[in-house]
Length: 203
Length: 203
DNA sequence: AAATATTTGTTCTTTTTTTCACAAAAAGAA
DNA sequence: TTCTTTTTGTGAAAAAAAGAACAAATATTT
Image 1 (spheres, rainbow over the protein chains, first blue to last red):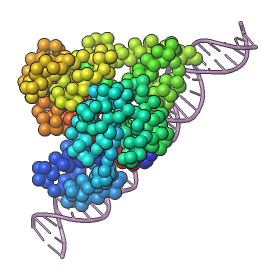
Image 2: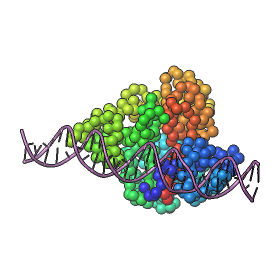
Image 3: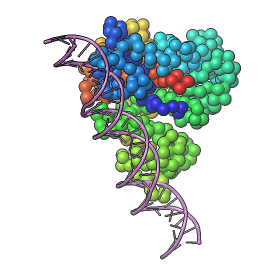
Image 4: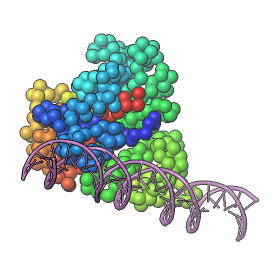
Protein backbone atom coordinates (compact mmCIF):
# COMPACT_ATOMS: atom_id res chain seq x y z
CA UNK A 1 0.00 0.00 0.00
CA UNK A 2 1.15 3.48 -0.68
CA UNK A 3 -1.16 5.90 1.09
CA UNK A 4 -3.53 6.93 3.76
CA UNK A 5 -6.91 6.13 2.31
CA UNK A 6 -8.62 2.76 2.40
CA UNK A 7 -9.53 0.79 -0.67
CA UNK A 8 -13.19 0.95 0.35
CA UNK A 9 -13.23 4.74 0.39
CA UNK A 10 -11.76 4.82 -3.09
CA UNK A 11 -14.35 2.39 -4.39
CA UNK A 12 -17.11 4.46 -2.82
CA UNK A 13 -15.89 7.50 -4.73
CA UNK A 14 -16.13 5.63 -8.01
CA UNK A 15 -19.60 4.60 -7.01
CA UNK A 16 -20.51 8.18 -6.30
CA UNK A 17 -19.22 9.13 -9.71
CA UNK A 18 -21.41 6.53 -11.38
CA UNK A 19 -24.46 7.94 -9.64
CA UNK A 20 -23.50 11.55 -10.28
CA UNK A 21 -23.32 10.88 -14.00
CA UNK A 22 -26.80 9.39 -13.76
CA UNK A 23 -28.08 12.46 -11.94
CA UNK A 24 -26.48 14.68 -14.54
CA UNK A 25 -28.15 12.74 -17.33
CA UNK A 26 -31.46 13.40 -15.60
CA UNK A 27 -30.75 17.11 -15.76
CA UNK A 28 -29.70 17.81 -12.17
CA UNK A 29 -26.92 20.27 -11.38
CA UNK A 30 -26.91 19.96 -7.58
CA UNK A 31 -27.15 16.99 -5.26
CA UNK A 32 -27.57 16.46 -1.51
CA UNK A 33 -25.54 13.98 0.49
CA UNK A 34 -28.78 12.17 1.28
CA UNK A 35 -29.83 11.61 -2.33
CA UNK A 36 -26.37 10.63 -3.46
CA UNK A 37 -25.96 8.25 -0.56
CA UNK A 38 -29.31 6.64 -1.23
CA UNK A 39 -28.41 6.07 -4.88
CA UNK A 40 -24.91 4.82 -4.10
CA UNK A 41 -25.85 2.60 -1.16
CA UNK A 42 -24.19 4.69 1.54
CA UNK A 43 -25.43 6.84 4.41
CA UNK A 44 -25.59 10.61 3.99
CA UNK A 45 -23.05 10.99 6.81
CA UNK A 46 -20.62 8.73 5.03
CA UNK A 47 -20.94 10.68 1.81
CA UNK A 48 -20.16 13.92 3.63
CA UNK A 49 -17.29 12.37 5.59
CA UNK A 50 -15.78 10.95 2.42
CA UNK A 51 -15.94 14.27 0.62
CA UNK A 52 -14.66 16.13 3.66
CA UNK A 53 -11.75 13.68 3.91
CA UNK A 54 -10.62 14.75 0.44
CA UNK A 55 -11.35 18.44 1.02
CA UNK A 56 -14.33 18.42 -1.32
CA UNK A 57 -16.74 21.14 -0.25
CA UNK A 58 -20.47 21.64 -0.70
CA UNK A 59 -22.71 24.56 0.12
CA UNK A 60 -24.65 24.37 3.38
CA UNK A 61 -28.30 24.30 2.50
CA UNK A 62 -27.45 24.23 -1.22
CA UNK A 63 -25.83 20.80 -1.41
CA UNK A 64 -23.00 19.81 -3.72
CA UNK A 65 -22.42 20.96 -7.27
CA UNK A 66 -22.39 17.89 -9.52
CA UNK A 67 -19.89 19.24 -12.05
CA UNK A 68 -17.50 20.16 -9.28
CA UNK A 69 -17.87 16.75 -7.64
CA UNK A 70 -17.22 14.96 -10.91
CA UNK A 71 -14.15 17.07 -11.58
CA UNK A 72 -12.84 16.42 -8.09
CA UNK A 73 -13.33 12.67 -8.42
CA UNK A 74 -11.73 12.66 -11.85
CA UNK A 75 -8.72 14.41 -10.35
CA UNK A 76 -8.41 11.78 -7.64
CA UNK A 77 -8.20 9.06 -10.25
CA UNK A 78 -6.18 11.05 -12.79
CA UNK A 79 -8.87 10.72 -15.42
CA UNK A 80 -7.62 13.73 -17.38
CA UNK A 81 -4.18 12.31 -18.04
CA UNK A 82 -3.78 9.28 -20.28
CA UNK A 83 -4.39 6.12 -18.34
CA UNK A 84 -2.41 3.32 -19.96
CA UNK A 85 -2.48 -0.36 -19.07
CA UNK A 86 -0.93 -3.55 -20.35
CA UNK A 87 -2.70 -6.89 -20.16
CA UNK A 88 -0.91 -10.17 -19.51
CA UNK A 89 -2.89 -13.32 -20.36
CA UNK A 90 -5.15 -13.36 -23.41
CA UNK A 91 -7.44 -16.15 -22.22
CA UNK A 92 -11.15 -15.96 -21.42
CA UNK A 93 -10.94 -13.03 -19.07
CA UNK A 94 -8.18 -11.26 -20.97
CA UNK A 95 -10.18 -11.27 -24.18
CA UNK A 96 -13.25 -10.01 -22.38
CA UNK A 97 -11.26 -7.12 -20.95
CA UNK A 98 -9.91 -6.15 -24.37
CA UNK A 99 -13.46 -5.54 -25.55
CA UNK A 100 -14.81 -4.28 -22.22
CA UNK A 101 -16.69 -1.03 -22.82
CA UNK A 102 -16.24 0.08 -19.24
CA UNK A 103 -12.55 0.75 -19.85
CA UNK A 104 -13.00 2.56 -23.15
CA UNK A 105 -15.72 4.83 -21.74
CA UNK A 106 -13.46 6.00 -18.97
CA UNK A 107 -10.30 6.93 -20.79
CA UNK A 108 -8.50 3.71 -19.91
CA UNK A 109 -6.38 2.42 -22.77
CA UNK A 110 -4.96 -1.09 -23.01
CA UNK A 111 -1.85 -0.51 -25.10
CA UNK A 112 -0.73 -4.12 -25.55
CA UNK A 113 -1.39 -7.71 -24.56
CA UNK A 114 1.01 -10.54 -23.74
CA UNK A 115 0.60 -14.29 -23.95
CA UNK A 116 2.81 -17.37 -24.20
CA UNK A 117 0.62 -18.92 -26.90
CA UNK A 118 1.94 -17.86 -30.36
CA UNK A 119 -1.51 -18.33 -31.90
CA UNK A 120 -2.50 -15.15 -30.08
CA UNK A 121 0.09 -13.03 -31.87
CA UNK A 122 -1.74 -12.82 -35.19
CA UNK A 123 -3.73 -9.64 -35.65
CA UNK A 124 -7.05 -10.91 -34.36
CA UNK A 125 -7.68 -8.68 -31.36
CA UNK A 126 -8.20 -4.96 -31.00
CA UNK A 127 -4.72 -4.66 -29.45
CA UNK A 128 -1.32 -6.07 -30.47
CA UNK A 129 -0.26 -9.23 -28.60
CA UNK A 130 3.37 -10.11 -27.88
CA UNK A 131 5.28 -12.81 -26.00
CA UNK A 132 5.82 -11.98 -22.29
CA UNK A 133 9.56 -11.46 -22.69
CA UNK A 134 8.80 -8.28 -24.60
CA UNK A 135 7.06 -6.75 -21.56
CA UNK A 136 10.05 -4.60 -20.48
CA UNK A 137 10.45 -3.18 -23.96
CA UNK A 138 6.78 -2.22 -24.40
CA UNK A 139 6.51 -0.88 -20.85
CA UNK A 140 9.44 1.42 -21.50
CA UNK A 141 8.13 2.46 -24.91
CA UNK A 142 4.72 3.59 -23.61
CA UNK A 143 5.74 4.54 -20.09
CA UNK A 144 3.01 2.31 -18.66
CA UNK A 145 2.83 1.97 -14.89
CA UNK A 146 -0.22 -0.30 -14.62
CA UNK A 147 -0.78 -3.94 -15.58
CA UNK A 148 -3.56 -6.49 -15.52
CA UNK A 149 -2.62 -10.10 -14.73
CA UNK A 150 -5.11 -12.58 -16.18
CA UNK A 151 -2.98 -15.73 -16.32
CA UNK A 152 -3.45 -19.11 -14.62
CA UNK A 153 -2.42 -19.69 -11.02
CA UNK A 154 0.93 -21.30 -11.91
CA UNK A 155 2.35 -18.37 -13.84
CA UNK A 156 0.95 -15.61 -11.62
CA UNK A 157 4.06 -14.87 -9.59
CA UNK A 158 6.45 -15.34 -12.53
CA UNK A 159 4.57 -12.78 -14.58
CA UNK A 160 4.36 -10.50 -11.57
CA UNK A 161 8.13 -10.58 -11.12
CA UNK A 162 8.59 -9.81 -14.79
CA UNK A 163 6.24 -6.84 -14.48
CA UNK A 164 8.03 -5.58 -11.38
CA UNK A 165 11.42 -5.74 -13.06
CA UNK A 166 9.93 -3.80 -15.99
CA UNK A 167 8.94 -1.02 -13.60
CA UNK A 168 5.19 -1.64 -13.22
CA UNK A 169 3.85 0.00 -10.04
CA UNK A 170 0.18 -1.04 -9.94
CA UNK A 171 -1.39 -4.40 -10.72
CA UNK A 172 -4.92 -5.65 -11.12
CA UNK A 173 -4.61 -9.37 -10.42
CA UNK A 174 -7.19 -11.90 -11.61
CA UNK A 175 -5.04 -14.90 -10.77
CA UNK A 176 -6.08 -16.56 -7.51
CA UNK A 177 -2.82 -16.11 -5.62
CA UNK A 178 -1.31 -13.58 -3.25
CA UNK A 179 1.38 -11.74 -5.16
CA UNK A 180 4.66 -10.97 -3.44
CA UNK A 181 5.48 -7.36 -4.27
CA UNK A 182 7.55 -4.58 -2.67
CA UNK A 183 5.83 -1.93 -0.55
CA UNK A 184 5.74 0.72 -3.26
CA UNK A 185 3.68 -1.48 -5.59
CA UNK A 186 -0.09 -1.66 -5.18
CA UNK A 187 -2.12 -4.75 -6.07
CA UNK A 188 -5.89 -5.08 -6.37
CA UNK A 189 -7.29 -8.59 -6.34
CA UNK A 190 -10.31 -9.81 -8.29
CA UNK A 191 -11.25 -13.42 -7.76
CA UNK A 192 -14.36 -14.18 -9.77
CA UNK A 193 -14.72 -17.68 -8.42
CA UNK A 194 -14.59 -16.51 -4.84
CA UNK A 195 -17.05 -13.69 -5.44
CA UNK A 196 -19.55 -16.17 -6.80
CA UNK A 197 -18.81 -18.80 -4.22
CA UNK A 198 -19.41 -16.61 -1.18
CA UNK A 199 -23.02 -16.45 -2.32
CA UNK A 200 -23.51 -20.15 -1.63
CA UNK A 201 -22.81 -19.55 2.02
CA UNK A 202 -26.14 -17.78 2.36
CA UNK A 203 -28.20 -20.48 0.64
CA UNK B 1 -27.56 -9.39 3.91
CA UNK B 2 -28.78 -12.48 5.60
CA UNK B 3 -26.33 -13.49 8.34
CA UNK B 4 -23.82 -12.76 10.98
CA UNK B 5 -20.51 -13.07 9.18
CA UNK B 6 -18.86 -10.36 7.14
CA UNK B 7 -18.14 -10.66 3.46
CA UNK B 8 -14.43 -10.27 4.20
CA UNK B 9 -14.34 -13.27 6.52
CA UNK B 10 -15.99 -15.40 3.87
CA UNK B 11 -13.50 -14.31 1.25
CA UNK B 12 -10.64 -15.06 3.62
CA UNK B 13 -11.92 -18.62 4.00
CA UNK B 14 -11.85 -19.10 0.26
CA UNK B 15 -8.35 -17.75 0.25
CA UNK B 16 -7.36 -20.18 2.96
CA UNK B 17 -8.82 -22.98 0.88
CA UNK B 18 -6.73 -21.97 -2.13
CA UNK B 19 -3.58 -22.09 -0.03
CA UNK B 20 -4.53 -25.33 1.70
CA UNK B 21 -4.91 -27.05 -1.66
CA UNK B 22 -1.44 -25.80 -2.54
CA UNK B 23 -0.02 -27.15 0.73
CA UNK B 24 -1.73 -30.46 0.08
CA UNK B 25 -0.21 -30.65 -3.40
CA UNK B 26 3.17 -30.18 -1.79
CA UNK B 27 2.52 -33.22 0.39
CA UNK B 28 1.65 -31.59 3.71
CA UNK B 29 -1.06 -33.00 5.96
CA UNK B 30 -0.89 -30.45 8.79
CA UNK B 31 -0.57 -26.69 8.82
CA UNK B 32 0.03 -24.00 11.46
CA UNK B 33 -1.91 -20.77 11.63
CA UNK B 34 1.33 -18.94 11.02
CA UNK B 35 2.19 -20.70 7.74
CA UNK B 36 -1.35 -20.54 6.43
CA UNK B 37 -1.63 -16.88 7.32
CA UNK B 38 1.65 -16.07 5.65
CA UNK B 39 0.58 -17.79 2.44
CA UNK B 40 -2.90 -16.26 2.48
CA UNK B 41 -1.84 -12.76 3.43
CA UNK B 42 -3.36 -12.73 6.90
CA UNK B 43 -1.94 -12.73 10.42
CA UNK B 44 -1.73 -16.00 12.37
CA UNK B 45 -4.12 -14.54 14.94
CA UNK B 46 -6.66 -13.76 12.29
CA UNK B 47 -6.48 -17.27 10.89
CA UNK B 48 -7.14 -18.73 14.33
CA UNK B 49 -9.90 -16.22 15.05
CA UNK B 50 -11.61 -17.01 11.77
CA UNK B 51 -11.52 -20.75 12.37
CA UNK B 52 -12.61 -20.35 15.96
CA UNK B 53 -15.54 -18.22 14.81
CA UNK B 54 -16.82 -21.14 12.75
CA UNK B 55 -16.03 -23.74 15.42
CA UNK B 56 -13.16 -25.21 13.41
CA UNK B 57 -10.66 -26.78 15.83
CA UNK B 58 -6.96 -27.51 15.61
CA UNK B 59 -4.63 -29.34 17.94
CA UNK B 60 -2.52 -27.24 20.30
CA UNK B 61 1.05 -27.82 19.38
CA UNK B 62 0.00 -30.01 16.44
CA UNK B 63 -1.65 -27.36 14.27
CA UNK B 64 -4.61 -27.91 11.96
CA UNK B 65 -5.35 -30.98 9.85
CA UNK B 66 -5.53 -29.89 6.22
CA UNK B 67 -8.13 -32.45 5.14
CA UNK B 68 -10.36 -31.46 8.01
CA UNK B 69 -9.96 -27.76 7.22
CA UNK B 70 -10.80 -28.31 3.57
CA UNK B 71 -13.87 -30.33 4.46
CA UNK B 72 -15.02 -27.68 6.90
CA UNK B 73 -14.59 -24.90 4.34
CA UNK B 74 -16.37 -26.93 1.68
CA UNK B 75 -19.27 -27.36 4.08
CA UNK B 76 -19.48 -23.62 4.65
CA UNK B 77 -19.84 -23.05 0.92
CA UNK B 78 -21.98 -26.12 0.21
CA UNK B 79 -19.43 -27.51 -2.19
CA UNK B 80 -20.72 -31.07 -1.86
CA UNK B 81 -24.20 -30.31 -3.10
CA UNK B 82 -24.77 -29.25 -6.71
CA UNK B 83 -24.10 -25.56 -7.12
CA UNK B 84 -26.20 -24.29 -9.99
CA UNK B 85 -26.15 -20.83 -11.53
CA UNK B 86 -27.80 -19.02 -14.40
CA UNK B 87 -26.08 -16.30 -16.37
CA UNK B 88 -27.90 -13.26 -17.76
CA UNK B 89 -26.01 -11.32 -20.44
CA UNK B 90 -23.87 -13.16 -22.99
CA UNK B 91 -21.58 -10.26 -23.84
CA UNK B 92 -17.84 -10.00 -23.26
CA UNK B 93 -17.90 -10.89 -19.62
CA UNK B 94 -20.71 -13.40 -19.92
CA UNK B 95 -18.85 -15.37 -22.57
CA UNK B 96 -15.67 -15.34 -20.51
CA UNK B 97 -17.57 -16.74 -17.52
CA UNK B 98 -19.06 -19.55 -19.61
CA UNK B 99 -15.56 -20.81 -20.33
CA UNK B 100 -14.02 -19.82 -16.99
CA UNK B 101 -12.14 -22.81 -15.59
CA UNK B 102 -12.40 -21.51 -12.04
CA UNK B 103 -16.09 -22.34 -11.95
CA UNK B 104 -15.78 -25.79 -13.49
CA UNK B 105 -12.96 -26.79 -11.12
CA UNK B 106 -15.07 -26.00 -8.11
CA UNK B 107 -18.30 -27.78 -8.84
CA UNK B 108 -20.10 -24.66 -10.01
CA UNK B 109 -22.37 -25.33 -12.95
CA UNK B 110 -23.86 -22.67 -15.22
CA UNK B 111 -27.05 -24.36 -16.38
CA UNK B 112 -28.25 -21.74 -18.86
CA UNK B 113 -27.60 -18.29 -20.28
CA UNK B 114 -30.01 -15.53 -21.25
CA UNK B 115 -29.68 -12.67 -23.69
CA UNK B 116 -31.95 -10.34 -25.67
CA UNK B 117 -29.91 -10.77 -28.85
CA UNK B 118 -31.38 -13.70 -30.91
CA UNK B 119 -28.02 -14.29 -32.59
CA UNK B 120 -26.87 -15.75 -29.25
CA UNK B 121 -29.53 -18.48 -29.28
CA UNK B 122 -27.86 -20.69 -31.88
CA UNK B 123 -25.85 -23.53 -30.38
CA UNK B 124 -22.49 -21.81 -30.28
CA UNK B 125 -21.68 -21.73 -26.57
CA UNK B 126 -21.08 -24.49 -24.06
CA UNK B 127 -24.46 -23.72 -22.48
CA UNK B 128 -27.93 -23.18 -23.98
CA UNK B 129 -28.94 -19.52 -24.36
CA UNK B 130 -32.56 -18.33 -24.16
CA UNK B 131 -34.42 -15.01 -24.22
CA UNK B 132 -34.77 -13.41 -20.75
CA UNK B 133 -38.50 -14.00 -20.57
CA UNK B 134 -37.79 -17.70 -20.18
CA UNK B 135 -35.88 -17.10 -16.93
CA UNK B 136 -38.80 -18.09 -14.63
CA UNK B 137 -39.34 -21.34 -16.52
CA UNK B 138 -35.67 -22.41 -16.44
CA UNK B 139 -35.19 -21.34 -12.82
CA UNK B 140 -38.16 -23.51 -11.82
CA UNK B 141 -36.97 -26.43 -13.93
CA UNK B 142 -33.49 -26.60 -12.40
CA UNK B 143 -34.32 -25.22 -8.97
CA UNK B 144 -31.56 -22.60 -9.32
CA UNK B 145 -31.22 -20.05 -6.55
CA UNK B 146 -28.18 -18.13 -7.85
CA UNK B 147 -27.73 -15.84 -10.84
CA UNK B 148 -24.99 -13.82 -12.47
CA UNK B 149 -25.94 -10.45 -13.99
CA UNK B 150 -23.56 -9.40 -16.77
CA UNK B 151 -25.74 -6.95 -18.68
CA UNK B 152 -25.26 -3.23 -19.42
CA UNK B 153 -26.13 -0.58 -16.86
CA UNK B 154 -29.52 0.23 -18.38
CA UNK B 155 -31.00 -3.24 -18.08
CA UNK B 156 -29.46 -4.14 -14.72
CA UNK B 157 -32.44 -3.44 -12.49
CA UNK B 158 -34.97 -4.79 -15.01
CA UNK B 159 -33.15 -8.11 -15.18
CA UNK B 160 -32.75 -8.11 -11.42
CA UNK B 161 -36.52 -7.70 -10.93
CA UNK B 162 -37.12 -10.53 -13.35
CA UNK B 163 -34.72 -12.74 -11.40
CA UNK B 164 -36.34 -11.84 -8.09
CA UNK B 165 -39.80 -12.68 -9.37
CA UNK B 166 -38.44 -16.02 -10.57
CA UNK B 167 -37.28 -16.81 -7.04
CA UNK B 168 -33.54 -16.13 -7.29
CA UNK B 169 -32.02 -15.52 -3.83
CA UNK B 170 -28.37 -14.70 -4.57
CA UNK B 171 -26.89 -12.52 -7.30
CA UNK B 172 -23.40 -11.83 -8.54
CA UNK B 173 -23.74 -8.45 -10.22
CA UNK B 174 -21.26 -7.21 -12.83
CA UNK B 175 -23.40 -4.28 -13.88
CA UNK B 176 -22.25 -1.01 -12.36
CA UNK B 177 -25.40 -0.17 -10.43
CA UNK B 178 -26.75 -0.71 -6.93
CA UNK B 179 -29.51 -3.29 -7.22
CA UNK B 180 -32.68 -2.81 -5.24
CA UNK B 181 -33.47 -6.17 -3.66
CA UNK B 182 -35.43 -7.37 -0.60
CA UNK B 183 -33.59 -8.21 2.62
CA UNK B 184 -33.57 -11.96 2.07
CA UNK B 185 -31.65 -11.66 -1.21
CA UNK B 186 -27.87 -11.33 -1.17
CA UNK B 187 -25.94 -9.45 -3.85
CA UNK B 188 -22.19 -9.43 -4.48
CA UNK B 189 -20.84 -6.65 -6.64
CA UNK B 190 -17.95 -6.92 -9.08
CA UNK B 191 -17.04 -3.73 -10.90
CA UNK B 192 -14.03 -4.39 -13.10
CA UNK B 193 -13.66 -0.78 -14.17
CA UNK B 194 -13.60 0.45 -10.61
CA UNK B 195 -11.13 -2.19 -9.49
CA UNK B 196 -8.74 -1.08 -12.20
CA UNK B 197 -9.41 2.58 -11.71
CA UNK B 198 -8.64 2.68 -7.99
CA UNK B 199 -5.07 1.80 -8.98
CA UNK B 200 -4.62 5.15 -10.70
CA UNK B 201 -5.14 6.91 -7.41
CA UNK B 202 -1.76 5.67 -6.22
CA UNK B 203 0.15 6.72 -9.33
C1' DA C 1 7.82 -39.79 33.62
C1' DA C 2 8.96 -35.17 34.11
C1' DA C 3 10.39 -31.16 31.92
C1' DT C 4 10.36 -28.25 27.99
C1' DA C 5 8.93 -26.09 23.93
C1' DT C 6 5.43 -24.91 20.85
C1' DT C 7 0.88 -23.78 19.16
C1' DT C 8 -3.97 -23.17 19.77
C1' DG C 9 -8.08 -20.73 21.67
C1' DT C 10 -9.78 -16.81 23.68
C1' DT C 11 -9.82 -12.53 26.33
C1' DC C 12 -8.30 -7.95 26.42
C1' DT C 13 -6.45 -3.74 23.74
C1' DT C 14 -5.96 -1.08 20.04
C1' DT C 15 -7.17 0.63 15.68
C1' DT C 16 -10.27 1.53 12.07
C1' DT C 17 -14.73 2.47 10.32
C1' DT C 18 -19.29 3.95 10.77
C1' DT C 19 -22.89 6.41 12.92
C1' DC C 20 -24.68 10.10 15.80
C1' DA C 21 -25.27 14.78 17.03
C1' DC C 22 -25.18 19.43 16.60
C1' DA C 23 -23.18 24.06 15.58
C1' DA C 24 -22.40 26.96 11.52
C1' DA C 25 -23.74 28.40 7.09
C1' DA C 26 -26.91 29.62 3.61
C1' DA C 27 -31.26 29.72 1.09
C1' DG C 28 -35.93 31.20 1.31
C1' DA C 29 -40.04 33.22 3.76
C1' DA C 30 -42.16 36.69 6.45
C1' DT D 1 -34.13 42.81 7.34
C1' DT D 2 -35.01 39.14 10.43
C1' DC D 3 -36.60 34.66 11.18
C1' DT D 4 -37.04 29.92 9.87
C1' DT D 5 -35.68 25.89 7.66
C1' DT D 6 -32.53 22.93 5.61
C1' DT D 7 -28.10 20.95 4.82
C1' DT D 8 -23.19 20.78 5.38
C1' DG D 9 -18.93 19.92 8.15
C1' DT D 10 -16.89 17.92 11.94
C1' DG D 11 -15.99 16.33 16.67
C1' DA D 12 -17.63 12.81 19.78
C1' DA D 13 -19.64 8.12 20.41
C1' DA D 14 -20.43 3.50 18.98
C1' DA D 15 -19.52 -0.53 16.47
C1' DA D 16 -16.63 -3.53 13.98
C1' DA D 17 -12.30 -5.41 12.82
C1' DA D 18 -7.63 -6.48 13.73
C1' DG D 19 -3.78 -7.30 16.78
C1' DA D 20 -1.45 -8.52 21.17
C1' DA D 21 -1.09 -11.34 25.03
C1' DC D 22 -1.27 -15.29 27.55
C1' DA D 23 -3.29 -19.54 29.75
C1' DA D 24 -4.31 -24.28 28.39
C1' DA D 25 -3.18 -28.09 25.83
C1' DT D 26 -0.09 -31.26 23.56
C1' DA D 27 3.91 -32.87 21.15
C1' DT D 28 8.81 -33.76 21.91
C1' DT D 29 12.96 -34.28 24.49
C1' DT D 30 15.52 -35.57 28.45
